[in-house]
Length: 261
Image 1 (cartoon, rainbow, N blue to C red):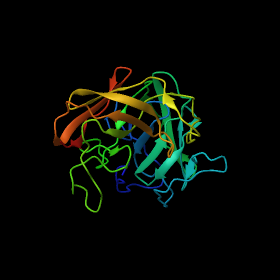
Image 2 (cartoon, one colour):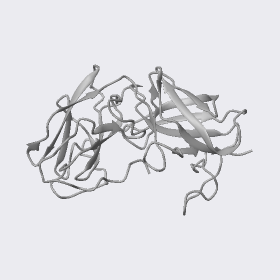
Image 3 (cartoon, rainbow, N blue to C red):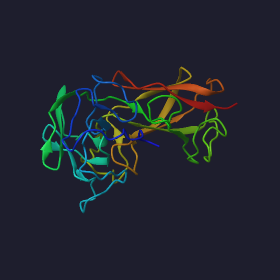
Image 4 (cartoon, one colour):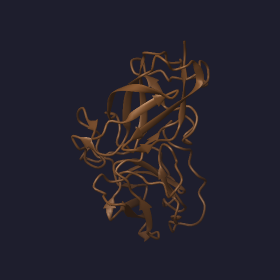
């Protein structure tokens, strides 16, 4: 639900990374939009793997996400990047939390062959909200904070349970790219306890400010932010109510959710 479907494999075993091949893994904002340290990003190109492909994440003996998956490796400023999944045409990686500055260099290596190095823009925060279509638009990955039910129109997800959120209810928004946390969490690691983003974002639902009750990393995953908010009392009912997140002056993609009466 959190990642775009793989791009068809093309080309031979030598990896090719285009200049605009790195995007926010939630919003898919086109380059040169920046990405943030610690964020989940999607990398597009060709020849990323030596034949095998996987969407299964693997953790090493140190309980950190591995940086070598089915023969694929990525480095950012020379630092190994944890890999979520790898296909010939697409990889999901975490930008190492140690990366700093306005730009960074990324390179892909497959079976000992390296792609050209590419420069990517870096910012302290570059928020993106995940969507159910894995394209950065439409229904957001937004759930009822108590039940985990997707806040979408009833019956809108085949085989899934959905229910519009109501004003005053607590919801959880899943995102990435909200920047550093307190305490800091090492690259490739899941948080071992409660973390909070260094800066608290603002959220609007139907253009109305929503009370943010928590903003940090989700305990389940590497690089996944969760923001708990209350649906504003003034939010209008509808199946495509806009939701926007802003942090440190940086605005996310606009997604939608369902709000009931």
